[in-house]
Image (cartoon, rainbow, N blue to C red; front, side, top):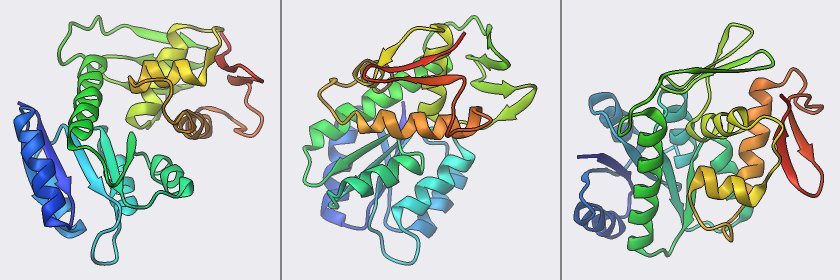
Length: 231
């Protein structure tokens, strides 16, 4: 059974999230601040984190997200009453896989958690046999089973969605993907959602795989259409 960590200082919201996630078949732990969150993450293995942005103390949800992402490759779903687009971009930039604004439907939260965990399990081979084969494209090597990426034999650390994007591009070199298609394939949600998520993750991916991210030669923009990986 998958285990979820909720980091939320509002007890009424956390209890509602916990009830719905329990009903969805998940084991749930709940903490109210960064200190307890880091202690729990060190103590337990989680399949996903539901993380509030505004928390008591000096460490907010953005900082927690960044620290988790530096150590682990698990789905992180941020929730916040802040609706400013820049806050959403900031959260995604720190490595969050999703960003939900309050108030939201608890059922929607469960659906998103389920979608992210299912995709993560499928891509890591937890629920399906993996052939463990390598993909090589122009100096970049990717191994799907271990979720490792090397550029000229140097190990590159990618977030969950960065890896998923790169794996999709590398298995379809030279194919042009629209932002909407990438959003559907990698995030598994309706293409009418916020495709700005794709732009943020492509930019971060370029920062890690391109020699000069401002002038990409590998992950190219096809203006007016989308992106492609040159094979």
